[in-house]
Image (cartoon, rainbow, N blue to C red):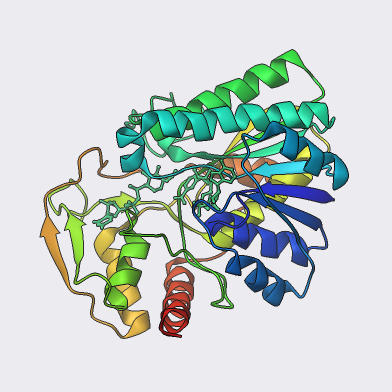
Amino acid sequence: MNILLTGGMGYIGSHTATLLLNMGHQLHIYDNLCNSNIDTLDRIKKITSKEVGFTQGDIRDTKKLTEVLINEKIDAVIHLAGLKAVGESTQKPIEYYANNVQGSISLIQAMQAANIRTLVFSSSATVYGDPIYLPYDEEHPTSPTNPYGRNKLQIEEMLLDLANSDNTWSIARLRYFNPVGAHESGLIGEDPNGIPNNLMPVIGQVVDGRLPMLNIFGDDYDTPDGTGKRDYIHVMDLAEGHLAALTWLKGNLGCHTFNLGSGNSVSVLELLHCFENISGNKIPYQVVARRPGDLPEYYAKADKAAKILGWQTKRNLTDICNSSWLWFQNSKNKKST
Ligand code: NAD
Ligand code: WQD
């Protein structure tokens, strides 16, 4: 298949790119590099020994996007381009709506112009909001609590309206839980600019001395050790979820929603201790106040993806910590050269 990957230079996109290339697909990445680095392209080529096309462009540039879709004879699109920091979205909501919602409208218009009707979209478990019950299944009511989450829900609803209006579309809306880990080569992983928001990149910056310690946001939740529990999913399992969805969409019309999670939750302290054991590093930490908006616990009911897509996670917390540790060591070397 000829696949266009928007946001393919980012954390999830670059890992998905290696998998798709290794499975024999032709790939073109479209990314404006607002949160990624051109070096990643060489790393993807190094891992796969395959050629990969790249256009630097913004998804809101409908004309440019349409040209790429036509010239590269694209069959299907995996749409990952977007801004993703929950906290930032509350500070800059209009930037988020413009980039994420307007950008997705532009992509759909470009796909219509190029007559492409197969789309996999990166959504998020954040669309569910406060749990009415756990685990979240795909039927759980949606009620996101921040602009980023509302962007994702608006795009999801737009895609449903689109599929209802035109029965030639095949769309998968994938709700990711907490993506973590890195490629087994140690060549690509997550390394956000500035001070990260998410737990694993914070641990990475404590390991390499950029941050003095981890602040644990509360140890008084109603969980066994008092710290927050999440459904962490290895980024290569997530990449495999995209491939499974894309393959399944080829024989199925309409708009479909799938949770991509492991179905288990792990606490901050459990993840921290696993990482300490694997790396042999003691991670200094202090417990601070709860982070506003954080939930005590959430995790996926992942049965639908298993039953319909034949996909489930294969990697465990040890694999997550091993790959992260390898990536942190490699990226530290990269920064000092
Ligand atoms: P990332 O920031 O590493 O990657 C996103 C990529 O999109 C970057 O390379 C960025 O340069 C590009 N991009 C952003 N806006 C663009 C635009 N207007 N035009 C072209 N390119 C643009 O993020 P990620 O973690 O890889 O996330 C990928 C997708 O998955 C996002 O849509 C995100 O919302 C979603 N998601 C991420 C998580 C997570 O925790 N990482 C969880 C659920 C969903
Ligand atoms: C995990 C746990 C924190 C940092 C976010 C988005 C969600 C999705 C995934 C995009 C929590 C604790 C964290 C730190 C800590 N992204 N923590 N100290 O908040 O579950 O989900 O990323 O769609 O929408 O909200 O992930 O990694 O920030 O937090 O104690 O410095 O780690 O309190 O319990 P979160 P996270």
